[in-house]
Image (cartoon, rainbow, N blue to C red; front, side, top):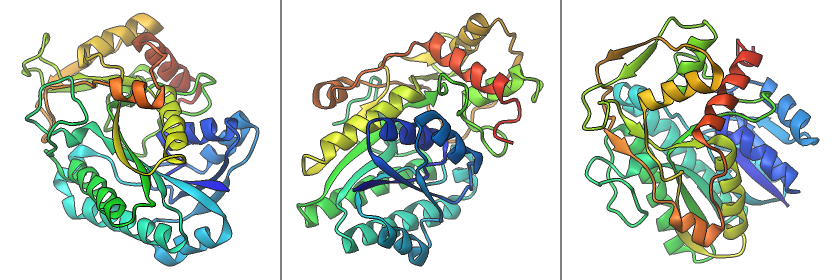
Length: 336
């Protein structure tokens, strides 16, 4: 029995694939390389010792995705595939609704058709919206501030409704906070195709000389230094969370949401200073306007994941900064 990892060549998906293979799972990856590179599959094999099965498929293509289900005996799905840039989603909402929502419906229809009723979903802390006070807990009311977040919220609802209709379904909704860092080998990491939408790849591209300075979006939030506060989590800690969530899903039924974060909030400037200290590299920056759809403060209460999954983070902010820089300086042009 194999685990289907949609978007498995991406940043979080690739790290999770390594954890799965090292834990003894057979892994099947589908990815259309819209925000990833073919070299990732080679490096997953290099680091894990086993090459995952791979299919270049967009999950909206039902015929092609059906062939994947027909070719493998699947036990569960870890669903990462989807567009993920908050700013772009505000400018192009229909692109996000078409890809993220339709793709998930296609995936879930095929899961039903092939009796694969276990799923770990890559959700987001964006589902907590603007009106909750950090730290966020899983039982808070949900809302969104941008179309990207709305797709995550809708997909959570898709899964809840399907599990209500069919009691054999089992799901974990993993609400991530802000993944950064990279595999400690420096062989895989975050390599966005265009201008980075997330903080750390922007910092590392400035550090390696690809960009002149960091743009800090918003300096007038109600935070200690005016810049946005987020809960940054090492991508390897996050990947291990998926492994534990999968193991739980395979032995239970029903749907449970889990926050995956450290429970500590750091401002953008805190991260810049930590990066400079950990790596002895200066990061010039400029303060610019807020991005539409961003909130001031977001960090997790992750006690439920610890209690029910046995998961907790191991890496510090310094570790995250060191590993991010190790990846970027070892791969100044990413996977190119």
